[in-house]
Image (cartoon, rainbow, N blue to C red):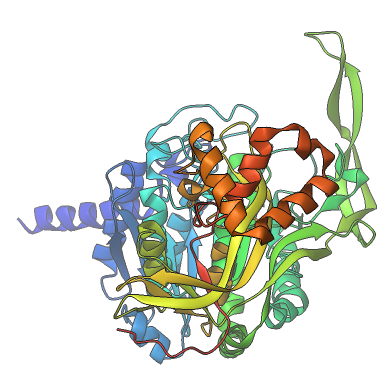
Length: 582
């Protein structure tokens, strides 16, 4: 009996040790990524082994009908986000599998969580949160669709169940996945965010490339720290690990030796969205053509270094973010869009492969190729300076009609402070009219995006709002999110993403044969409009040749014209106004 018990205990110990290995590690060729089911089976075993220091939390329901699972590791066993902030600890949020065909982060995080627990290496002043698999929908749709990539041998699909690219969905939040992510972000309030990816494009010698929040787009307080301390330290430590890095390779022309351009992450992307919350943000991009095991281990090392540096600088990071939040509350002018300054660049060393052209075996026409027998190291141009191409001064407050429910819901998820009008109220405020805009001819992520928006601004416009409408004061640390979503000219504003398209169509007009008599009578009673019409005819002789155009001119300059047509419904309150608010 004792022998049986002894053998049973040995078997149990072996089973436990075996369970600690990830599916990636158990595969003989290390060219395998865990399925969603395997990921969800793995983490509960770690929780069972280390119940005091790791916990799983489920948020929302994704488009695949499954909750988003967050794995949290905490050295002292505190898992209350509010208490963690009270303890002045830093929080790192790591996202995995937003593109399931780029699954390095999924496998690397499984190993890293285990090792942090097993080796008792959890940081004292940092709590680390891992989204196990973000695009669950795509992960379940397993295949080989990312054909240009070197491993793993099977993986998930880029699009989710609604065929959305979830890394274009953070502002518009069409997917339930994005709504669940917002719950996580605004519950745990991370100081640092990392999104793990794999790149595609040119061939070069590096396993790992890095996107960091573009320095001119980031708040200056945080940019000073990341550009001079955090990022250089990450580059130095990764080189010591055997994974020398270079900035993400987005070539100025077709090949990297022409120069590379810093990626500008607008708010549709994960890091563009997190930066609106004053979070230090990074994207790892392993190289698609490197062996899968190297990509996994490079991602593992990067996450480990990021955690270690955050532990080292925990106090400093907290102070910098606090100062940033305070300054953003007072900031007056905000960038709405950015343009590359192609006259400014740095020279950086780059390890690439010589590119050339040879006849295609298929078409016989010239095709690009990279010759791995001809590696090179040379200095290339790195364009990393952007200028704000459009800005807006914030109002004292925005007033949002409650009818625009999706905006209100997103603001609530993002912890935007709002007040509601107690009574129907006519306010004198600044309003925009959409003077002109262009719209894409093909859908992009389920939308026909607007661009080249021009506005007619009307000051001191009297607008009636109703009981329950929302007032959003711009004295908040989340101001960047508020301004960049509500200013219609912003690159990823709610207007850009079609939230307000219903106000772009006219609801009433006139029958010309009936309006003729009404218009004539109105002109007799209002000679100032007759003069306006005559002046317009003088400036525009073509107007005299069109009876319909003259009627339209009278209509548009009369009280009969639909006053809400093309009026952007969100008002801008510019001066302190006593309001009766809930």
